[in-house]
Image (cartoon, rainbow over all chains, first blue to last red; front, side):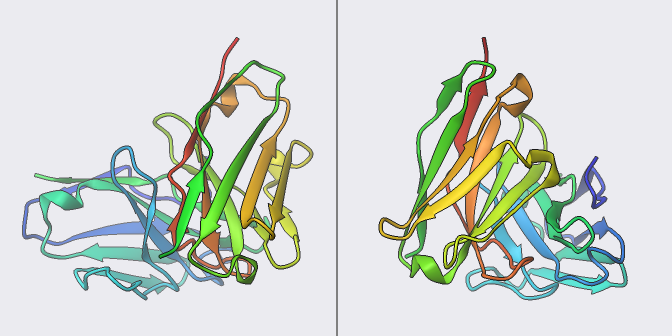
Length: 110
Length: 120
């Protein structure tokens, strides 16, 4: 079972907004930076958000990240059909001394 | 531009070993680390371990301790991941990704993935 908990799926209409949650504990999200990754079908993951809320160059500001306590949230506004993908949160776990990921959330743009 | 190019697909028998390579270009290899992540068919991402390309320090997930070895060759900017005693549960796409020198740094560039199939 993944250390971080994400909803298996979310959906919303084009142009709408959606949020994806990632729940952990004090040993991971609570005390370490969170990253978010997007994985389109059949491709490698791509960094979307790092250090909780920072976007790499080239990532549009429609994507945002936040962290509060032991949870993190990815927000996507102005949904497009091209946003349909799997989204993963990831961080470091200080007790496990290992990287950890959420189980992934499949986004469907209806 | 930063690129990580991995070796091709492998088919192995149970009990065998596999060694996947990851050739880096477009940046100073020894200034970063390499993380290895795998993804079983239809499943999520699984963190396997990290190696510093600066000094070769490694951290392995407990699940793979004793069965995995990660190395780097700074002369060729290639990272390697060897997994031994393969079982069908090891059938997965294996990814290398660039990250920083500190644990928990984000993986900002990824290889294209290497499919390893374990089958008798």
